[in-house]
Image (cartoon, rainbow, N blue to C red; front, side, top):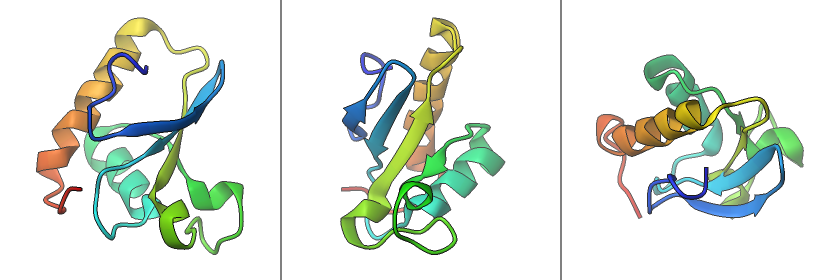
Length: 98
């Protein structure tokens, strides 16, 4: 996952089965990013607000920029495709990038 992640996406924490990744979109909450990733790009992940203080999956401040990706039971080819889709969404979503 780390080797294929687009350069604007940054891993803050990872384990054997997950990675917390900071998305590159300015002033966009991770709940909104996750929703569009699922609906438009076919990538399912969880916003950081699901893992700490927050309302409706939204976190406050910089914590709202983090997304949890699960990589358990995902083969290498699928991981590469997810990372390609993350790269694609940078232009498709039309949001300002850092």
